[in-house]
Image (cartoon, rainbow, N blue to C red; front, side, top):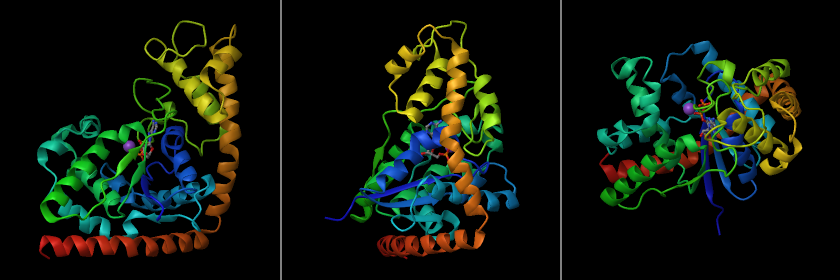
Length: 329
Ligand code: ADP
Ligand code: NA
């Protein structure tokens, strides 16, 4: 039996991943390599839906690829590539834009959130059609499973709907993928505004980047918004900030939440924050060091990415040929 196909992508925005990316998605990327045939993509085309700097984007894509390798993505087992190196993503995306419906795209809550700053009228058209490009990313590889954080649930539902509609209209073409969301760490919250998810595209004060100097992340954790109580217990409704810190601790240290509540019994938020900073430092230190080593040899990094793009294109080109045949091109 062939192994299940896995696809997932991550934006290179900001040049460093954050803890939510790791706990919600990247941890699963690494684990799934054992049991699946994986395609992992730095989705640089998705990173230009908001204002961007060309030189930064180019560098951020390389830094992102280096971090994925440092976290344990193994190019000998998995296909690691940069989205813009595989033009089939755009070829499929246009066809899917003509299959997706304006109404369904209009219901995407991420567009509503992200377009708030510019207003819907001032936002790029790409910000609106982003979920359709994401559907193309996934469907190109005949993907069975998509490991993502909880924030991507609605986009995955759109992907499934578009794939099903296409298959019904033009015949069986795409595998309809299922979503793979982890039980713990699926939604890491911003440290300053714990009602929002942590994101690399939000102000950095509430976001712990993997490439942050540990002194910087310790300061962010120390300044995390908590509540006026004093007990270290998980209570998402009344103590979202403390609950978030416990969730991160638990996911990184492997200790259960009840065990941590015991451990912090009779101690305050200061102790929790201090210990969490240590846990984070222990996790990020080797990742930062390895990322830097990989960035010191850009020729090797580019060689790995060229190999990944070549392998990705074999699969992607076959899908596009089938789609074009079925749709009249
Ligand atoms: P960001 O919002 O940081 O730019 P991306 O859109 O690049 O993140 O998403 C990359 C992956 O990380 C996706 O699978 C997404 O679901 C996951 N992810 C992003 N933020 C979080 C979070 N705060 N908690 C859990 N998973 C997250
Ligand atoms: Na995002």
